[in-house]
Each structure stands twice: as C-alpha cells, then as structure tokens.
Length: 390
Image (cartoon, rainbow, N blue to C red; front, side):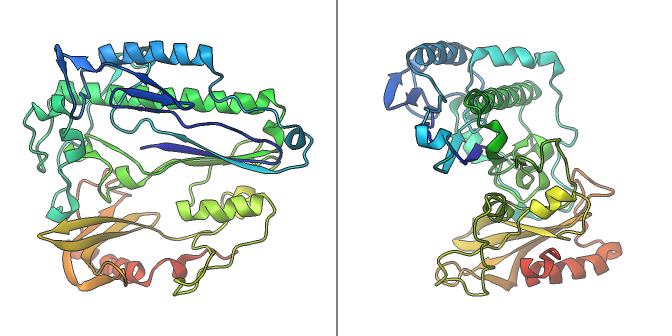
C-alpha cells in the first residue's frame, strides 16, 4: 500500500517533492544519494532482500538525518498571497511506504518488539475458493531472500513462521514511518496557522495481505486487499472527530472535496461517458459527516483483473453490510471494456456476520442460494442502483 495525502489549502502553496527510497537509491529534492546495497558480501542488481534489511535501515536512518539537516523536508514555503487568504491551493503529497520493499529508519523497529508480533489466525485459503481468486504473490517472491526459500505461492502453502513474523514487523515499521512523515506535514500546517481552514484527506490506494490465507500483497478481491483507509478532515464539520460504519468508496472522495471547498457540484456520469470531460460516479460524503448514521449506500464495488491462458478475466466484487460477493467473468478489454458474464471462471460469497475472515466460500452452499442470486443481480446492475438518497 502507498499512502496519499491530499491537502486542499485555502491559502497555501508548496514545493513539496515526493521522496523515493527504492532499491538502494534515495531521491529527494532533485538530489540523488547513492547507497550501496551489499548483503552477504555481494552486490545485487536484481530485487534486493526484504528480510535482510537491518544493515539497510541503519543506512537509511543516517540518510534521513543527513538530508534533513541540508533541506527542510516537508516545509511548506510561506506565500504572502496565500497566507493573506487571497489565493487557494491544492497540494497532493504522496508517501511510497509501506509499499515493497519494506525499508524505513531503524528507530521504528523499537515500536514493534518481535515478541509482540503475531502470526495470522487464518493461514489457509478459503474453503471452496475458486482457483482464479488466488495469486501466487510473485512480487514478494521476486526478492532474492524470499526467492531462496523456494516458496511456490500456491494455495495452502505458507512461508516459514519466522519469515512471516519478520515481514509483518517490517510492514508495521514502514507504516509507522509514513505516519511520522504525515505528522510533519500536518505540523507545518499548524506552524503556518493554516490548520483551521485547510481540508485534509488521507487515503491509501488499497489494502494489503500479510499472510492471511497464506496470501501476500494486494492482487486479490479478498477483504484484506480491498478494504483501505480513507480519512477526511473538514474544518468546522469534523473538528470533534467522527467515525461512520456506512459503506463508502474512493470514488466518493472527489465529489466530497468539491463540496467541502464550496465549488460547483459535479454532474453524475451518464451510462456512456466516453465523451464527457468531467463527471462523477461517487457521492459527496458531506451529508454523512453531518449525520454518520443516516441512510446511505447499501453496496459498494471494486474489481481486480486476471489473465489465464491468454484470456482476459475481471474480478467484479460487491460489498454489502453483511456479504462480499465476487464473480470472475471473461473481459472484452478495449475498446468496449465489458464483462462477458456467459464465460465464468469462478464465484465467491463470504458471509461477514459468521465469517469475517472470509474463510468459507458459500457460493455453492444451498443455504445461500437466494442471497447469491440477489447479489449476482445487484453486482451486474451496478453502482447506480445504490446511490444514497441525498
């Protein structure tokens, strides 16, 4: 997962440049600080290790200190017109971690003593899971320290327990490092006196599997991969903090920011929006911020692609308050980009009331036949049927 923070400033400008720490090179503010990635006495030009990171994180921590003494990372420069409220600004800040590889300053390991890290509760693939739902996490297995384990990535296989523990610890540490960097951005808003009139949205582009079901990375339609963070601060609306259990989607973010900034509302996208320059599929969350328990969407949607024997396949998933239902039909690709419902490679149905970890696929369970048919129809009808009554 990568984290993105969108800052819609009413009066601020920024020359914030995204940092990238990737495969032995640290890039910031146009400078490139070369790092030697030597492990076990060898230089590696392929994917570096995931777990042999101790030497690397020490170097990284030193680099952060060096760069921060030579430049004010995340400093938002004062703009007189902006600070006087005469000019509005939008700033997007992207954080690469905790994306692979899990690299971070060493200090963050202290937050997660290894004895505090637990193995996943559900190490096996869901019972009756269709083959197409699985991915063999090739991205993770391409790193040479994982590659040397000869893990197949097949269902109902797993990495060694100590490897799982260390991977989870590294992920948590990388995530906390990003949290710390985000805090520096927000502190700069405070320093400039802008925190009380700045809309801030925080979101991660997807979830992440850390050994649940024996699965890793993001490339599935399971809950752990699809469920991702999204938080929004609107001054004067969310100041006291609030949480809603209503279903929301990332397509809701754009119209939310538009309404929060009191801009002209976006039109709803028509059935065929090929020639439409600007429209929305989501719904502004501003009404939900004012009443977190109000009647809202009854379902949200996501999808993830597959290919098999040269055939394009698309996993379409619908999530309701109780169920996740996924179909894996053939997919036509460009220019039509349409599902081929008559060619089905797999179906999944998980009951989150009785099975929140999605360990049992109920798609072929006779007891769930009625709900399967209902969810199938809702999935194929699509998102327009579930727009909230606002």
